[in-house]
Length: 155
Image (tube, rainbow, N blue to C red):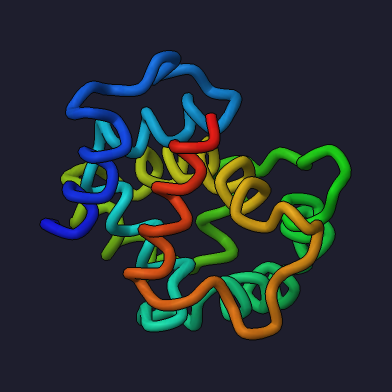
């Protein structure tokens, strides 16, 4: 994962961010992702336009189809982020995708869904600071890594 290591390593100076492991704030979110590179790869695959899941727009569509469009919209919008449970996220992504994500994380689908449910709302919120999903998406994997590096630099 050379590009990610390069971007985040240069921003952090090779050190984990202060507040890593906290559940709130961009430093805590990115610290959690830095501590688990596999989770970062999975989230990048979910959100990047060149990912297998249709990027942010595709993910938001999955939420709408599952009847949880308002939950995901709250993460993009400028108001309070609505929480999502691991079970709800598993319903949105479906059992096959959750099994694939869990296998890549080396855990079971319930644990993988729980991890994603803790990270995804805040991360999407921080990646959409204007309160709207960009019509062109968040960009490819490289663009997304640049945005994450920018969030770290801004903290």
